[in-house]
Image (tube, rainbow, N blue to C red):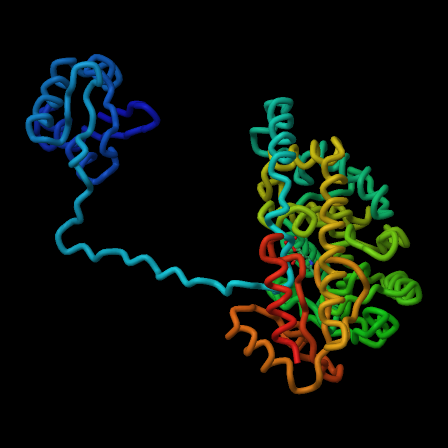
Length: 472
Ligand SMILES: Cc1ncc(COP(=O)(O)O)c(C=O)c1O
């Protein structure tokens, strides 16, 4: 005999059958089950229990049985019964630790550094809460019932794919047919999927930028691919070297709009060289357009995908433009690869929330996304200008005026000590060295990768002051 009831916000599941089977009467079983629920805290102090009539009906037992169990527990002090406020779990019925139980110690909460310029995050305080909520409200109100079920299209909701197709064509020069867009949980998820797809076509190696995010290289490695570093300089990755990597290299991962982390824009010649390599070898270009919306000195250069949509998998993400916590990303897949990508993805889309997808679609269509990006662009541009002014005469800033990070070049032999000294001053910094591919033949370069997007507006000024104080 199993019963459950709904109280004011609390659902309690009671299993009386074991006690009854054990030869005890129903009343004793119910009394014990309620006592145990109060003792363990499953029924929180103050919780109002249903009337004996309702509870008896729910459990399919006599009302008297419930009334007697309540009476016994009131007498024991586990419950209180007052005219007008019904029967409640007594305030003193706090959960008690079982004898011998080891108390669970909460890990001591370590205070992080007061200031951080670690790259990789937008200003989380800039998340457009009100506009997002308004979009979510409209999206949920208008959502068809099937949005609440398992997604039947592994590519994700068509509403978002259509909204993105329009936005990407307009803002990033991407050839984007909604049918060829695949939604994913951020770039990392998409990269893993494509890595698995490449492995399935027997690709062994992927070229990556000699300075790049170690976690992305690791994701590729975990799918069974080896990563080969390309030299990176002021013109971006040296794509003319791709041919020299040999036939085992079947793909290249690039950040053409704003090389991460060195900050170069891939020049037109190197864009063309990448596309030529892909066309002659059948290789695939993976374009990580992580911060393409943020360019401050000129109109953003269009995506490389526009040069050859048949050879480029384009990746976009909401992690910089909105927030990494959303875990939303999108890929535009070449027609020839679509079937293989979908085969790897599986039959049902379980990777991201349909309601978030509908909300983002609404956010884009309503113009809120453009407004938000425009606002954040101004904020980040102002910060970058302030950063450049603050370090002028101390260290050179390299990389284009774009994105959420800048590179401050340092004299040889100083990077490590500076990062450490800053940490003592409560400022978290990141050096360029951690992004270097371990197999890279490039001469070592020392620099700071400064994520000026990371601080909140209120901590930006003291963070910048802490940085200038830490510089040589
Ligand atoms: C170079 C680069 N690509 C992509 C991303 C976004 O990754 P995701 O969409 O998985 O959050 C980041 C975020 O830090 C990044 O630095």
